[in-house]
Length: 185
Ligand SMILES: NC(=O)c1ccc[n+]([C@@H]2O[C@H](COP(=O)([O-])OP(=O)(O)OC[C@H]3O[C@@H](n4cnc5c(N)ncnc54)[C@H](OP(=O)(O)O)[C@@H]3O)[C@@H](O)[C@H]2O)c1
Image (cartoon, rainbow, N blue to C red; front, side, top):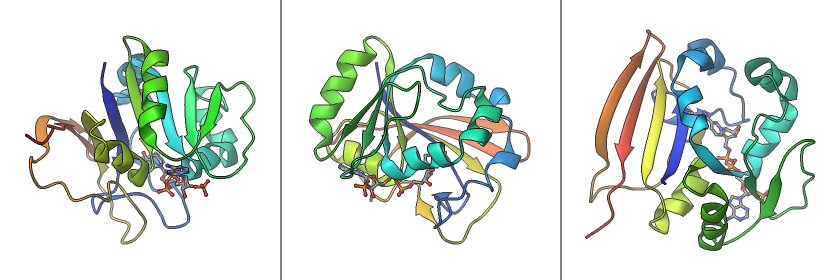
């Protein structure tokens, strides 16, 4: 069972524009031709920040067209927010705030033998990394640059370095890099 940050980024390191648009992402690859179907089949619990959650709610039609359902996850989801938000219809959502460690314990129980997916954003993944709870970084790098936007992983990781374990090309529009995250000695 691993805790994975699986995401798509522009070549210059952004997962969304400053105003939370993902329009740049969709033309780059078809979800069903990517690693996503195999990846999600092994996920038992998800965590996301409120901006990511609200993107899914705002883009329900697009999400339904891509995944077949306006709320795309059958697994339990923990949404981090300091505000009071409504759970999407058909979802299994727990709204949480603050320290990620307690939430990670709850997610681990829910996930059982499966993996925990930190959906994003980058700082939330960083909060799990800061506590030594992140095992893998899996990033699809699109063949585009955005110039500005929401950073893929706003942390400094120098020692130990991320350990590259695989590289997979998806046509001309994307490459997937998988890294193991080693703990400090
Ligand atoms: N390219 C991709 O594959 C991909 C993947 C994931 C997301 N995205 C997109 O990237 C953007 C990410 O946005 P973002 O960087 O702003 O990140 P985000 O993590 O989705 O949302 C950040 C917000 O989450 C809440 N939050 C985070 N940590 C918290 C904590 N410990 N306790 C309580 N609340 C906490 C705070 O909002 P409150 O004001 O609610 O407290 C914070 O402002 C979104 O547009 C999303 O759709 C893209």
